[in-house]
Image (tube, rainbow, N blue to C red):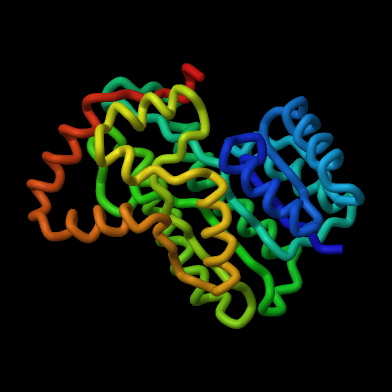
Length: 265
């Protein structure tokens, strides 16, 4: 039996993907850092969906050794894959001079290095018969450089470009899609954060459930990328009309007002 590998399974978006895929009766392999939270999610899915084939293996995506151990355990269990949903991500937002090494390493490795590593591991354990689906969650924040969100936007842009190149290499063997959502109200602090950005923040927000549905639909159709939400597409369209220096000043003014630090969660 072939599995869907879902990263970031314990997060708000990951949970939405897990529930949607469970409703379809998909065989799931869930991963995240917390064994306790993964076990709770696994138990919840089993209770809601009788007979569901769901397993979990904890993995710290920042760690090369952790990723090797994850795939070694998957190999021990004889697991093969037909889909990867890379929903893990770290979205620290603050002035770059305030970063420390831990914040740099965590965001760069989880958002990009971990994704590339898991893509490689899944491809090696897939049939690549044309039905394999490789889905990465990027961000509309990766479309333009983002002052005060510089590292996050750079890693998400790198992820999008990686997926665009990989789909050419795997043409006819696998579908490769990068989905670009905006803000999602996955926690109370994020709801307040979104509200602090005024009308634009409120208009561009989408629920994790709607993002998960749009993402799975996009990769099934083998879309290169998919920007989720009509308002997000409009904002990006009109933003492109502004000269680059003006665009950067507007973004800097907007993102400088608030701060988001995953280390404080």
